[in-house]
Image 1 (cartoon, rainbow, N blue to C red):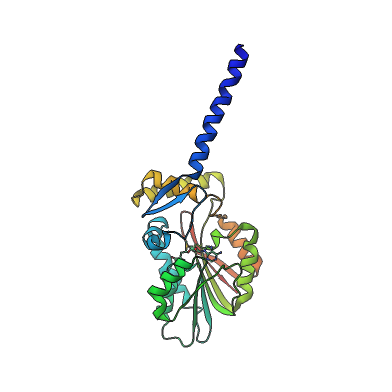
Image 2: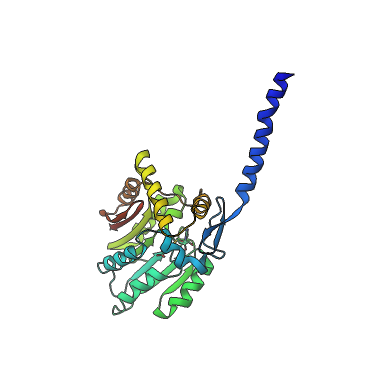
Length: 263
Ligand SMILES: C[S@@+](CC[C@H](N)C(=O)[O-])C[C@H]1O[C@@H](n2cnc3c(N)ncnc32)[C@H](O)[C@@H]1O
């Protein structure tokens, strides 16, 4: 009898836990800036485009500084009569800054690509007057014309790992000799101690930005299986293996890293 009662207890506990787990998994929670997301359910669609500009600034350390650096680096690559793409252009801020900086250049084709239609529409509304084409498409399927510059500001990290090398190779193949890829990515630490420290300091950063702890946890849960960072070493290796002759880090703050890769 006693054994049967003992056996029954863990079973009951397991049932209660799994029910709670199921409820948590489907729950929509606030991640801040009037954006909500479910466990493993982060999306750049829904309400995100309307609040994206504020949310991204509070979520990515040195967001504005990285844009400034990308603009400065673009001086080495933008030339008359060539194409320049931004991969994952969201509401169009970065490509608008780069295009404005190079307004004196002749016949440059500026293209911002994003897989979320609402992002493209907002980008077009705000920056379409600069002559930038904003296209709704998946960068994995997009047929690029020969280009002198690719900008990718925290976008490639959202592509599946299985196809990432293929994507980087496609970018390399589409670049003209001497062309550049300016790529910013969130990275994992190279060892467990580094990863522990980097994620702990990132939580501190988000707290300083005024996010509630529940919002920080909800955002982290929402990105499961959607944000797939590699280590910085893996990113550099992928760029070199694609064929880029010069690959180096241009900026780093905690897990947020900028690279320049030149064909
Ligand atoms: C972190 S945001 C980019 C921020 C933006 N570059 C900036 O400077 O503000 C990532 C963007 O990439 C887009 N995206 C993610 N995967 C994509 C894909 N496979 N093809 C095209 N766009 C993608 C998302 O919709 C999102 O707008």
